[in-house]
Image 1 (cartoon, rainbow, N blue to C red):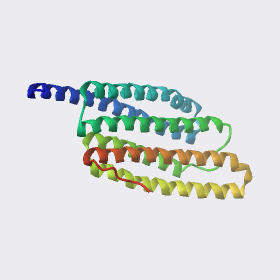
Image 2: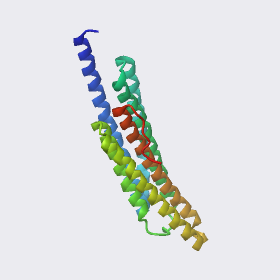
Image 3: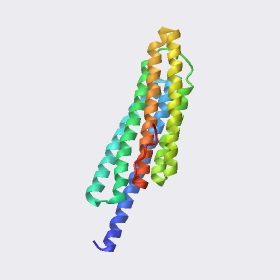
Image 4: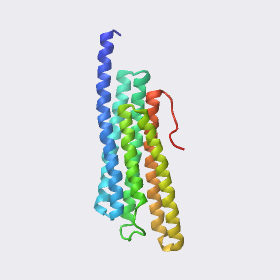
Length: 225
């Protein structure tokens, strides 16, 4: 392959990657919005908002398939090597993590619908805090990918520790409420699931951050315990 042909191929590759990064950022913003809406719906017992989250998950799923197909097309037609191949492979893995986050937000919305006819057994404080932190982690992980910023990626893993602590607080508090009043067991269990799913969202954001470090350094770290 001549140098001009190589250069042209590289330009085409970079254009395709830039386009996929834009689609990825859009997918990420939809996931962040789904997380925020699912918790707002739960906190306010807003059935319409919960249904919007559930309906919006289909858009996230379609974006995953679209980006996946484009990644496979790039591998087949561009035959990227070394770091360029890692860039495509990282994108491929990230969309799976984002799709799973969307699923968890949808599950939270379904719980809102399930317990909508019951008053909340306690004001929600730590669950919204977990949600805000999880959203932040998603955004930071995606920004770290676009910028290839290892420092920002590592910071995502540090935030994951705080999410784990909040989950511990939520479980302890809900267990205390359940022991004091067995009638709260059903709803308290559902709220524990919400906390667990937010923790899983944070784990998927950390997965993305780990992929960023791998992309830049070629080494796969462990950013959470």
